Image (cartoon, rainbow, N blue to C red; front, side):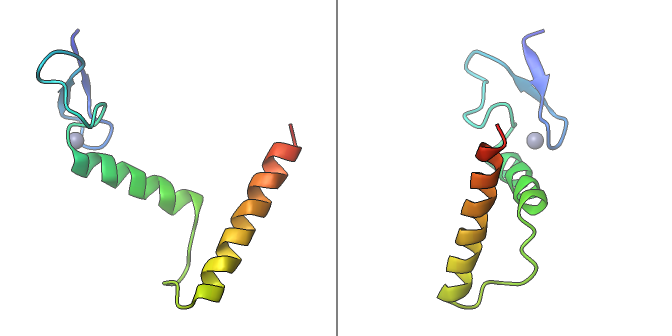
Length: 74
Ligand SMILES: [Zn+2]
């Protein structure tokens, strides 16, 4: 006990004590970002780079509608 594994690379990560990384449960900020990136990829499949402010607004509106629909379902 005393350590768990980094969800990204599987390296042992200290759960507590001086070796516990700031990025816990990830071994490093890099692994944390990789995992976050994966999550964003799955959650918001943005097919193309954003090109215009209108496009950003459109995406935000869609996201709001999605969140509204989710909370309305409860
Ligand atoms: Zn890692």
